[in-house]
Length: 277
Image 1 (cartoon, rainbow, N blue to C red):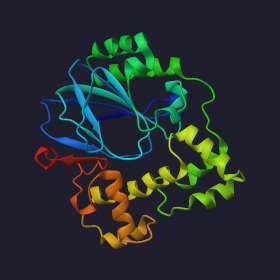
Image 2 (image 1 turned 120 degrees about the vertical axis):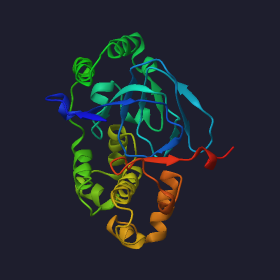
Image 3 (image 1 turned 90 degrees about the horizontal axis):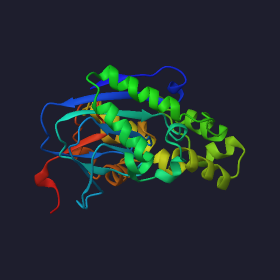
C-alpha cells in the first residue's frame, strides 16, 4: 500500500490517494467497517469485484471503478482479484466538491464510475489502467479531480464546528444536542445541514466516531485494557452499550473482531466457512 497526499487546493478535499497491488487473488471476505468518509476506488484492470450489504450475500458485482458513499454500517467485500487498484479517501464532508453532488445522495450507496461520471468515468479508467507506476496514477487522478473541483470548498460553519469537536484525535465526545446548542442553530436545521454535507445524520456520524476509536485501539493492541475501560475511553455509557454498537456497525462482537492489519482497523477478515449460506 502506497499513500500520497496532494498539494493545494486538492488537499482541502482529499485526505490521501492510495495505490495497492495484489500479487494473487484473496481467498477471504472482509467486513468493510463504517468510517463516515467517502472512497473512490478504481481498478487498473477489468477483473470483477464483489460486495454485498450486511450479511445477505446477495452479491453486486462491479468493474473499473466505484464510489462507496458514507456508510452507516458494515458491508461485505471480496474475495478480491489480483492486480493494482488506486483510490481516493476524501476528507469528511469534502467529497461533494469533487464528486459533484451532495453526500446525502450517496448515503449507504455504492455507485459505479460509469453511473457517476458516464463516458468521462470510462475514459478516466482507461488512462489510469495505462499507467505503470503509483506516481503516474496519482498524477492522473490529481489532474482529473482538479478539473472537477467546484466552489465552495468549505462546508457549513455549524458542520465544521461539529467535526472539529469530534476530531479523530480527541478522545472526549460531546453529545449531538450539546454541539447543536453551541452552533446556535435549531436541531432541525443543524441535522439537515450536517446530513447534506457529511451524508450521515449527526447521531449516525457520532456513532461511527465512537466505534472508530474502539476499532483503532483494538487493531493497534488487542490487549490494551479491558473492554469496560475501552468503552469508557470511547465515550460509551458502559461495556454493554459499546458491544451493541460494535455488533450493529461491524457485524461481529469486539472479541470476534480480526483486523486485516494493525493499520487496517476498518477491515475485518471473515472466514468463508463462517458466512451464512
